[in-house]
Length: 360
Ligand code: HEM
Image 1 (cartoon, protein in one colour):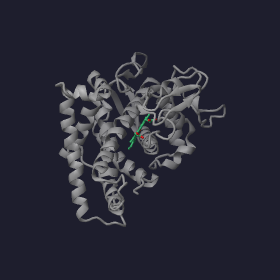
Image 2: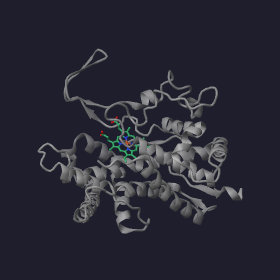
Image 3: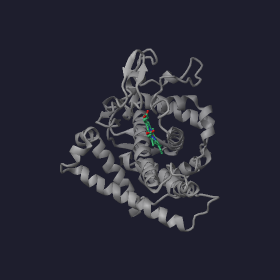
Image 4: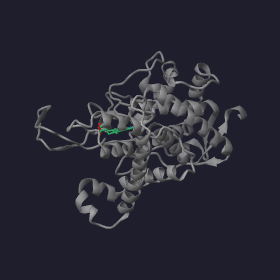
């Protein structure tokens, strides 16, 4: 099956980074809200994987997908979304914005389907070029297996899931990362110092991460502190289960409370504070922490973790290598506490200056 290796991912991220840097350059030194910029670049990484190429930001098909993801998250974060998650059949019968959301998500899925039809005609079984082609190859290989999961519906759904699960999560984390840099300029300076020493002016690579414990610790700590998905996603117990003297009957819905671990004072010093030292030992070496549950844990943990970690590292270092982020108000007035929605904890909207470091 098509596996997105680190190298392919790396090149997708880097090619998208060039565009984001160019977009920032055109608005450097003026006030910007980084949301659209970051959503577009993360969205284009998923496009590179699913469709095999990136889009211009004003491409109508790219905008269709971005709007579908946006509508999906707006509903997911709203009370109607929370109600729909619990009582889908009842809420479906009521009028409301969720119907508009389903309509636009269906348009995005129809686009994925059209792209699959185009690829079906010229499919090279030996060299799939993107996720859709790889899925089609698997469908053909397993066409005689009555139990195969590789069918058309699953192709469309998994491609859409890459957008739904892999864009807002990563771009929100990036927004929170840069917000923390604005709030804590001394931390931003230390990250930039490490970038200058380890990477200099060349293009960052994933291999740099092991040589950059401080930067890695900052990224981990931002993820821990922001606690993007406090209750993870609901799971259902598939058989009667005994767990720590509790009997959990088959069919029970279970919500893993990731926050209870991410904010455990036995695992993290001052868990309510933002402190990269949580992931560093006394010699400044990166220290793994078993309580880092931002991507969930176990068999159903996030399958996009490796991709997300590459994106966070490469976008963060590529941008701080060239730019410094500063706020439009003094750091002490900046609220870094993520806003709670029914879906998760999202960074607050903010404006900032993105200044070229060469001009500092
Ligand atoms: C910073 C970025 C991300 C965070 C914090 C994150 C976090 C999570 C969490 C907490 C879960 C639930 C795990 C569980 O049920 O225990 C999850 C599931 C999932 N994530 Fe991510 N994720 C991120 C990025 C991505 C990316 C980039 C992709 C794919 C391109 C992705 C695809 C998925 C999918 C498909 C699931 C559902 C897995 C299942 O149901 O078995 N995620 N993610």
